[in-house]
Image (tube, rainbow, N blue to C red; front, side):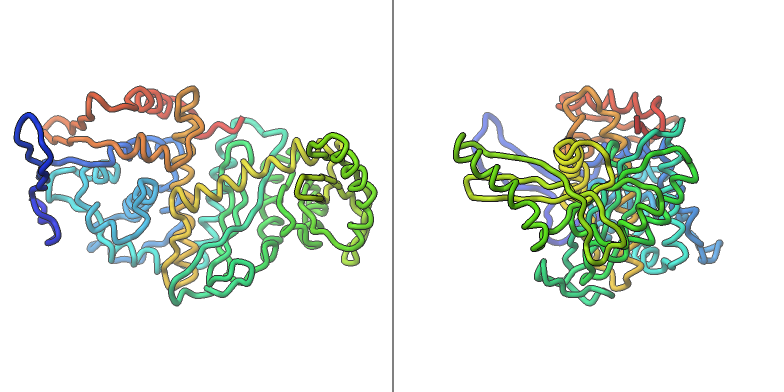
Length: 453
């Protein structure tokens, strides 16, 4: 029997009335509250995430003293993050959990073959090298490319940064004036249609939104075009990424772009006539007015003029002008309404899932590289959850946030029994999402690694 911490008692005292006396206690049966982690393990059979990460690392431990192979350590950590246990300290309890033992290929007997403890996993995170970080970054791109059976005609890539507040002496944790806090400033590049996170890069806390991304973009464009020479790539981002160096990388790489652009005195003069028309339309109809046009504009830091989409909007609160710099050739309103603003769902929602769904901003290691590795572990957990969501197509969970997936099909209680012949996992017969679990399991066994079509 596992010894419970001193703050716990074996029984829970409740005093509300009932037809018979009620007793509630903690059981020493092999039970788990996270039976849905089995779905993560099944998803990995197609994705091979943990195996891929393990191959990127060098194991310098003495072979005769290794109790937990690298792939097991990574599986344990990735599955814990996906299940809502983002802190390494959680492993001290979960190392006894029978479901986590099963997915890490251990025999789930009570008190036997324990998984790794917090010190072991912390040593893994803090021994990561820059070379290994680069290998893992490349692995995620290669894994994405390998999921396509035939070359795609077009890829829309969204890029955005987000704040990860820090609370200690982490390397490169710096104060950011806009967010008014000490933080890291990670940047995410994801494929818009599937949501696959291609690049998740940690940056110093005082970084500008678009700084430090040109090298990543140049390498990413080169690798994707090397794999698919005829692919049409479009980069989409907010005004923080409309820097001259970012635009130049796109144009030299023959990549299309639609990037938000900040207003200035020149642009205010150029859009003034359009805003006046929108204002008159608003006062005539008493409804929101939106007008579009485009101009060729050359900033002082640009070598040549570029197309600028202008949106003149008049609301009850007043004017709301917006600008987008692009080399797309469709109509101004089409570029803005049918393409640019869609990044809200495909990029900003992804970041919300990373921050709120799997707590990817829990970057409490002292070393910068260790925190980058933590981001990669969160990236791996997110990919597995996306795979499960893809497999839920046609069910009530087809568009569920990752937190909703966890609440419904990961946090499922099960009893585990071990015999000579088998390991039996028993779920509750009244499980409210039994149908979804059955459908997802069947599809995970038969579906391809990823559906990007």
